[in-house]
Length: 297
Figure 1 (spheres, rainbow, N blue to C red):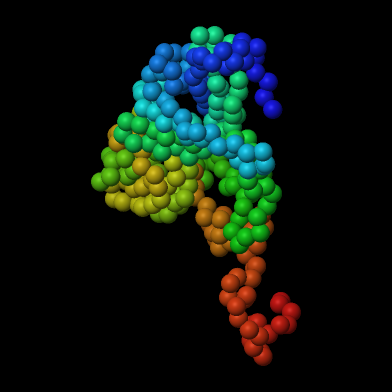
Figure 2: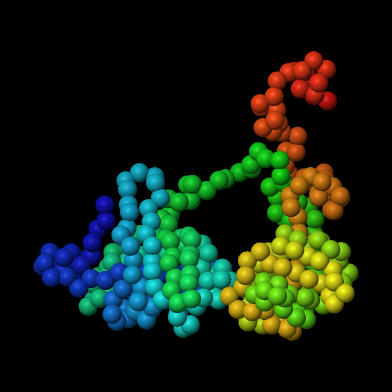
Protein backbone atom coordinates (compact mmCIF):
# COMPACT_ATOMS: atom_id res chain seq x y z
CA UNK A 1 0.00 0.00 0.00
CA UNK A 2 1.39 3.38 -0.99
CA UNK A 3 1.29 6.38 1.35
CA UNK A 4 0.45 9.62 -0.44
CA UNK A 5 2.03 12.94 0.57
CA UNK A 6 -0.52 15.13 2.35
CA UNK A 7 -0.50 17.72 -0.44
CA UNK A 8 -1.14 15.11 -3.14
CA UNK A 9 -3.83 13.43 -1.04
CA UNK A 10 -5.61 16.76 -0.55
CA UNK A 11 -5.43 17.49 -4.28
CA UNK A 12 -6.96 14.10 -5.13
CA UNK A 13 -9.69 14.55 -2.52
CA UNK A 14 -10.66 17.95 -3.96
CA UNK A 15 -11.85 16.39 -7.19
CA UNK A 16 -9.81 18.80 -9.31
CA UNK A 17 -6.38 17.42 -10.07
CA UNK A 18 -3.30 18.75 -11.85
CA UNK A 19 -1.50 15.48 -12.35
CA UNK A 20 1.07 14.32 -14.86
CA UNK A 21 3.44 11.38 -15.23
CA UNK A 22 7.21 11.77 -15.13
CA UNK A 23 9.84 9.20 -16.08
CA UNK A 24 13.42 9.49 -14.82
CA UNK A 25 15.92 7.31 -16.69
CA UNK A 26 19.42 6.64 -15.33
CA UNK A 27 21.60 5.40 -18.18
CA UNK A 28 24.39 2.86 -17.85
CA UNK A 29 26.94 5.69 -18.03
CA UNK A 30 25.32 7.46 -15.06
CA UNK A 31 23.57 10.24 -16.98
CA UNK A 32 20.03 10.97 -15.68
CA UNK A 33 17.32 12.12 -18.08
CA UNK A 34 13.71 13.04 -17.39
CA UNK A 35 10.58 12.94 -19.56
CA UNK A 36 6.99 13.96 -18.88
CA UNK A 37 3.60 13.82 -20.57
CA UNK A 38 2.84 17.34 -19.30
CA UNK A 39 2.93 20.21 -21.82
CA UNK A 40 5.68 22.00 -19.84
CA UNK A 41 8.91 20.83 -18.23
CA UNK A 42 8.70 19.53 -14.65
CA UNK A 43 11.74 19.43 -12.32
CA UNK A 44 12.13 16.51 -9.89
CA UNK A 45 15.18 16.34 -7.62
CA UNK A 46 17.18 18.63 -9.94
CA UNK A 47 16.29 16.47 -12.96
CA UNK A 48 14.40 18.36 -15.67
CA UNK A 49 11.63 16.14 -17.01
CA UNK A 50 11.33 17.44 -20.55
CA UNK A 51 8.08 17.79 -22.47
CA UNK A 52 10.05 18.16 -25.71
CA UNK A 53 9.84 14.50 -26.75
CA UNK A 54 6.05 14.39 -26.32
CA UNK A 55 6.38 11.23 -24.22
CA UNK A 56 3.28 9.25 -23.37
CA UNK A 57 2.89 6.06 -21.39
CA UNK A 58 0.66 3.03 -21.69
CA UNK A 59 -1.49 1.76 -18.85
CA UNK A 60 0.53 0.23 -16.03
CA UNK A 61 -0.15 -3.44 -15.44
CA UNK A 62 0.43 -4.32 -11.78
CA UNK A 63 -0.39 -7.41 -9.73
CA UNK A 64 -0.05 -8.53 -6.13
CA UNK A 65 2.02 -11.61 -7.01
CA UNK A 66 5.58 -12.05 -8.25
CA UNK A 67 4.75 -11.46 -11.90
CA UNK A 68 6.75 -8.62 -13.47
CA UNK A 69 4.78 -5.40 -13.87
CA UNK A 70 5.40 -3.17 -16.85
CA UNK A 71 4.41 -0.41 -19.22
CA UNK A 72 5.62 1.23 -22.42
CA UNK A 73 6.88 4.75 -23.07
CA UNK A 74 6.35 6.25 -26.53
CA UNK A 75 7.88 9.48 -27.78
CA UNK A 76 9.87 11.33 -30.40
CA UNK A 77 13.60 10.96 -30.93
CA UNK A 78 15.31 14.28 -30.23
CA UNK A 79 19.00 15.04 -30.55
CA UNK A 80 19.08 17.07 -27.34
CA UNK A 81 17.45 14.50 -25.04
CA UNK A 82 17.24 11.05 -26.53
CA UNK A 83 19.03 10.42 -29.81
CA UNK A 84 18.85 7.44 -32.16
CA UNK A 85 22.61 6.85 -32.11
CA UNK A 86 22.57 6.67 -28.29
CA UNK A 87 19.89 3.99 -28.43
CA UNK A 88 21.90 2.07 -31.02
CA UNK A 89 25.04 2.24 -28.85
CA UNK A 90 23.20 0.47 -26.03
CA UNK A 91 23.38 3.30 -23.50
CA UNK A 92 19.77 2.64 -22.52
CA UNK A 93 19.99 -1.16 -22.32
CA UNK A 94 19.18 -2.08 -18.72
CA UNK A 95 18.87 1.57 -17.68
CA UNK A 96 17.10 2.22 -14.36
CA UNK A 97 13.64 3.82 -14.67
CA UNK A 98 11.43 5.54 -12.10
CA UNK A 99 7.81 6.33 -12.91
CA UNK A 100 6.27 9.14 -10.82
CA UNK A 101 2.74 10.52 -10.62
CA UNK A 102 3.28 14.22 -9.94
CA UNK A 103 1.20 17.30 -9.15
CA UNK A 104 2.77 19.64 -11.68
CA UNK A 105 1.76 22.74 -9.68
CA UNK A 106 3.79 21.39 -6.73
CA UNK A 107 6.34 18.75 -7.92
CA UNK A 108 7.23 17.90 -4.31
CA UNK A 109 3.77 16.28 -4.08
CA UNK A 110 4.34 13.04 -5.94
CA UNK A 111 4.22 9.29 -5.53
CA UNK A 112 6.42 6.58 -7.04
CA UNK A 113 4.28 4.34 -9.23
CA UNK A 114 6.89 1.93 -10.57
CA UNK A 115 10.65 1.36 -10.37
CA UNK A 116 12.41 -0.97 -12.74
CA UNK A 117 14.68 -1.25 -15.74
CA UNK A 118 14.38 -0.52 -19.43
CA UNK A 119 13.77 -3.60 -21.55
CA UNK A 120 13.26 -3.80 -25.29
CA UNK A 121 13.57 -0.51 -27.17
CA UNK A 122 12.14 -0.19 -30.68
CA UNK A 123 12.99 2.83 -32.81
CA UNK A 124 12.06 4.25 -36.18
CA UNK A 125 13.41 7.26 -38.03
CA UNK A 126 11.66 9.74 -35.74
CA UNK A 127 10.13 7.91 -32.75
CA UNK A 128 10.86 5.31 -30.09
CA UNK A 129 8.97 2.84 -27.94
CA UNK A 130 10.62 1.67 -24.72
CA UNK A 131 9.47 -1.18 -22.49
CA UNK A 132 9.76 -0.65 -18.73
CA UNK A 133 9.95 -3.77 -16.57
CA UNK A 134 9.51 -3.75 -12.81
CA UNK A 135 12.16 -5.00 -10.40
CA UNK A 136 10.31 -8.33 -10.18
CA UNK A 137 11.58 -9.08 -13.70
CA UNK A 138 14.93 -10.00 -12.14
CA UNK A 139 13.25 -13.08 -10.68
CA UNK A 140 12.77 -14.34 -14.26
CA UNK A 141 16.48 -14.15 -15.08
CA UNK A 142 18.48 -17.39 -14.97
CA UNK A 143 21.11 -17.66 -12.25
CA UNK A 144 24.01 -20.05 -11.87
CA UNK A 145 25.44 -22.39 -14.48
CA UNK A 146 23.57 -23.95 -17.39
CA UNK A 147 23.72 -27.65 -18.25
CA UNK A 148 24.49 -27.40 -21.95
CA UNK A 149 26.99 -28.58 -24.53
CA UNK A 150 28.54 -25.18 -25.18
CA UNK A 151 30.79 -23.27 -22.78
CA UNK A 152 29.05 -20.79 -20.48
CA UNK A 153 32.16 -18.75 -19.64
CA UNK A 154 32.89 -15.36 -21.18
CA UNK A 155 36.07 -15.24 -23.22
CA UNK A 156 38.85 -13.69 -21.16
CA UNK A 157 37.15 -13.93 -17.74
CA UNK A 158 38.50 -15.79 -14.70
CA UNK A 159 36.63 -19.00 -15.57
CA UNK A 160 37.99 -18.95 -19.11
CA UNK A 161 41.52 -18.36 -17.87
CA UNK A 162 42.86 -16.67 -21.02
CA UNK A 163 44.13 -13.10 -21.07
CA UNK A 164 42.11 -11.29 -23.74
CA UNK A 165 44.32 -8.18 -23.60
CA UNK A 166 47.32 -9.55 -25.50
CA UNK A 167 48.08 -8.81 -29.15
CA UNK A 168 47.36 -12.43 -30.06
CA UNK A 169 43.70 -12.00 -29.11
CA UNK A 170 43.02 -8.29 -29.63
CA UNK A 171 43.86 -6.00 -32.52
CA UNK A 172 43.37 -2.36 -33.45
CA UNK A 173 42.26 -1.47 -36.96
CA UNK A 174 41.60 1.64 -39.03
CA UNK A 175 38.78 1.86 -41.54
CA UNK A 176 40.16 2.16 -45.07
CA UNK A 177 36.77 2.11 -46.77
CA UNK A 178 33.15 1.21 -46.11
CA UNK A 179 31.65 -1.85 -47.78
CA UNK A 180 28.61 -2.26 -50.02
CA UNK A 181 26.44 -1.93 -46.91
CA UNK A 182 28.22 1.06 -45.36
CA UNK A 183 26.44 0.79 -41.99
CA UNK A 184 27.76 -2.71 -41.27
CA UNK A 185 30.59 -3.59 -43.69
CA UNK A 186 34.13 -2.23 -43.83
CA UNK A 187 37.63 -2.85 -45.11
CA UNK A 188 40.32 -2.11 -42.52
CA UNK A 189 44.08 -1.87 -42.24
CA UNK A 190 46.21 -2.93 -39.28
CA UNK A 191 44.82 -6.46 -38.94
CA UNK A 192 46.91 -8.30 -41.55
CA UNK A 193 48.58 -10.47 -38.88
CA UNK A 194 45.32 -12.32 -38.15
CA UNK A 195 43.96 -15.20 -40.27
CA UNK A 196 40.50 -15.23 -41.81
CA UNK A 197 37.59 -15.97 -39.44
CA UNK A 198 39.79 -15.16 -36.41
CA UNK A 199 37.49 -12.36 -35.24
CA UNK A 200 34.14 -13.93 -36.18
CA UNK A 201 31.69 -13.71 -33.21
CA UNK A 202 34.22 -11.35 -31.61
CA UNK A 203 33.53 -8.01 -29.93
CA UNK A 204 34.27 -4.77 -31.80
CA UNK A 205 34.50 -1.45 -29.92
CA UNK A 206 34.71 1.84 -31.83
CA UNK A 207 37.44 4.13 -30.49
CA UNK A 208 37.03 7.25 -32.63
CA UNK A 209 34.54 8.82 -35.01
CA UNK A 210 30.78 9.24 -34.84
CA UNK A 211 30.37 5.76 -33.32
CA UNK A 212 32.98 6.13 -30.56
CA UNK A 213 31.98 3.94 -27.62
CA UNK A 214 29.57 1.79 -29.61
CA UNK A 215 29.97 -1.99 -29.36
CA UNK A 216 29.16 -4.56 -32.03
CA UNK A 217 29.69 -8.22 -32.86
CA UNK A 218 31.59 -9.43 -35.91
CA UNK A 219 29.66 -11.66 -38.28
CA UNK A 220 32.23 -12.20 -41.03
CA UNK A 221 36.04 -11.84 -41.16
CA UNK A 222 37.82 -12.24 -44.50
CA UNK A 223 41.35 -11.48 -45.69
CA UNK A 224 41.40 -9.54 -48.97
CA UNK A 225 44.18 -8.14 -51.09
CA UNK A 226 43.07 -4.65 -50.14
CA UNK A 227 42.92 -5.30 -46.40
CA UNK A 228 40.75 -7.04 -43.83
CA UNK A 229 37.02 -7.29 -44.51
CA UNK A 230 34.68 -7.23 -41.52
CA UNK A 231 30.89 -7.40 -41.41
CA UNK A 232 28.89 -6.66 -38.27
CA UNK A 233 25.78 -8.53 -37.18
CA UNK A 234 23.87 -5.33 -36.43
CA UNK A 235 23.96 -2.25 -38.62
CA UNK A 236 25.06 1.08 -37.16
CA UNK A 237 22.67 4.06 -37.29
CA UNK A 238 24.97 6.00 -39.67
CA UNK A 239 27.53 4.89 -42.30
CA UNK A 240 31.02 3.89 -41.27
CA UNK A 241 33.58 6.57 -42.16
CA UNK A 242 37.13 6.12 -43.39
CA UNK A 243 39.78 6.84 -40.78
CA UNK A 244 37.68 5.67 -37.83
CA UNK A 245 39.58 3.34 -35.50
CA UNK A 246 38.32 0.38 -33.53
CA UNK A 247 39.48 -2.45 -31.31
CA UNK A 248 38.36 -6.00 -32.03
CA UNK A 249 38.68 -9.09 -29.84
CA UNK A 250 39.03 -12.64 -31.10
CA UNK A 251 35.76 -14.54 -31.41
CA UNK A 252 34.80 -17.70 -29.56
CA UNK A 253 31.73 -19.72 -30.54
CA UNK A 254 31.77 -21.63 -27.21
CA UNK A 255 32.30 -25.03 -28.91
CA UNK A 256 34.69 -27.68 -27.54
CA UNK A 257 36.53 -28.00 -30.87
CA UNK A 258 37.16 -24.24 -30.94
CA UNK A 259 38.43 -24.21 -27.37
CA UNK A 260 40.81 -27.07 -28.16
CA UNK A 261 42.03 -26.19 -31.67
CA UNK A 262 41.92 -22.38 -31.65
CA UNK A 263 42.91 -21.59 -28.06
CA UNK A 264 44.44 -24.81 -26.65
CA UNK A 265 42.38 -24.15 -23.55
CA UNK A 266 40.22 -27.25 -23.34
CA UNK A 267 41.07 -27.86 -19.68
CA UNK A 268 39.11 -24.69 -18.85
CA UNK A 269 36.14 -25.55 -21.07
CA UNK A 270 32.97 -24.84 -19.05
CA UNK A 271 30.42 -26.84 -21.03
CA UNK A 272 29.19 -30.44 -21.02
CA UNK A 273 30.07 -31.70 -24.51
CA UNK A 274 29.24 -35.35 -23.75
CA UNK A 275 25.72 -34.80 -22.50
CA UNK A 276 23.13 -37.00 -24.31
CA UNK A 277 21.26 -35.32 -27.12
CA UNK A 278 17.82 -35.87 -28.65
CA UNK A 279 19.11 -38.87 -30.60
CA UNK A 280 19.96 -40.69 -27.36
CA UNK A 281 16.55 -39.94 -25.91
CA UNK A 282 14.63 -41.30 -28.91
CA UNK A 283 16.85 -44.24 -29.94
CA UNK A 284 16.63 -47.79 -28.58
CA UNK A 285 19.16 -50.32 -27.34
CA UNK A 286 21.04 -52.33 -29.98
CA UNK A 287 23.24 -55.28 -29.08
CA UNK A 288 26.84 -54.38 -29.78
CA UNK A 289 25.91 -50.83 -30.74
CA UNK A 290 26.86 -47.56 -29.17
CA UNK A 291 23.59 -47.36 -27.23
CA UNK A 292 23.08 -50.84 -25.79
CA UNK A 293 22.50 -49.83 -22.18
CA UNK A 294 26.06 -50.58 -21.15
CA UNK A 295 28.62 -48.35 -19.52
CA UNK A 296 30.05 -45.57 -21.66
CA UNK A 297 33.84 -45.34 -21.73
